[in-house]
Structure formats: structure tokens, C-alpha cells
Image 1: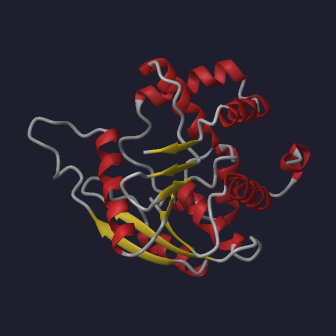
Image 2: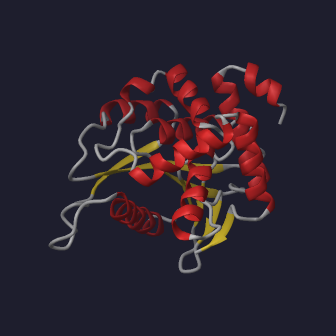
Length: 246
């Protein structure tokens, strides 16, 4: 990918180019795939949905798209009407599933990001399996991947990353992250261009402290250089840390 093009191209073109590059190089989507997009109502998953709908016109294979939004019992900021209208305009079917995430906590337990994530992932898998989807697309981007790698290294002592593609052993499913080559600033620029940035939902629990700490350390290490962050991503790819089994 020509990085001079990335710097100069309009935000929508950048997202299309880099998402297509990730899909083709990572073999994230194939002919006949049924792809379920996990849409939170936030900028990342909304941009992902838009990109996958647009790329259906240019990628050399056919695939089906549907979006699932999981409504929780603690976050009510998602403007579902706006989300549904956007998805419909992009030709993507939409389902809203209510899940009592706090209601499932055992007595004495406190709400945390890990618990929420596992509950949402469980419901995504169940929904996909029941309806014949073979791919679940998540909106994580390059910065998310690098932050997770450093969090695992600093806090768990493991060289583990957030994979671009994860194949489940127990289920006939893959998790895919088509925005893996996109920096957060590029996703934000695209969301702004699409007019969805102002309606994006933000979790009231926010970014957890470990991720904030990792983000500040990465900023100090890289000077927020796009080139440096992309070299880190390239090293993870070279080490085959972005393709995993679970």
C-alpha cells in the first residue's frame, strides 16, 4: 500500500483501500460467506458496516451481510433509529437483541469490561450459529490490536495479540477484523465524513485503566508515528500472531 496515497486520499477511499487490503491479504472473507457484523452503535463498527457494504461491489467474491446490535441493561446511549437508518441505507439487515449483562452477574461481583465482552461474544456466537453465519466481523482497528499486544506483554507476560482472524475449534465460525490496517484517526475521519460520528455511542464504563495506560506508553514509544505503528503491526504479522485458533 502506498502510504503517500493514504496520507492524501479522502477518508472514505482510505477506509475502502485498507479494508480491502486486510480482507484480501488475510483471506478474511471468501465466496459465499455469511458475515454477521457486531454493531455497537459506535464509530468503529459503523464504519466497518459501511466498508463491508461498499466493498461488495468491488471484491472478487460474493458474500452476505447482516448486523446484530446487542442492547444491554446499563447502556442506553445508542441512537438505534440512526443506526438502523444507516444500515438500511447501506443494504444491511439489522437485528436488536436485548441481553441482561449486569443481570447475569453473580452476587458480589462488579461490572467490568471483561464480563461484558464475554457475554456479548457468547450471544454473538449463539445468534450466528442459529442462523447459519460462518463469519463474525468486529470493528477493532490497528490501534486496538497494538494496545492489546502491549497489554498482554506488560500485564500477563505473554506475546499474544488481538488476531485479524480467529478460527474457533468448537464452532464452524471465524472472527474477523477487517479494519486491522486502519488507525483510529482514519476511522474517525471516515465516520465524520459519513455523518455518523455525532451519533456514535460511547460505553459509560469507558476505556479501562489498563488500556489507557497501554495507550499512553505506546504514544510515548512511537511518538504517535503512523509509520512506527505500522511497523509494529508488520512485526506481529511476521510472527504469525494475528491468525489464531480458539
